[in-house]
Image (cartoon, rainbow, N blue to C red; front, top):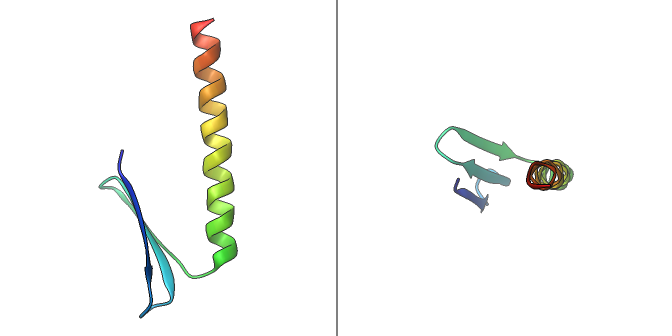
Length: 55
């Protein structure tokens, strides 16, 4: 999965493209940090799940 992010100075947003299906336009920096927190939590949960599957 490819993830790209860029700052759009004309709209004053952070534009995030996730794969071919998801495009986000975020205008509040707190929402960007909130999204990062959610993605980190998801990554931790996935890593825990995968480690339990191997054990």
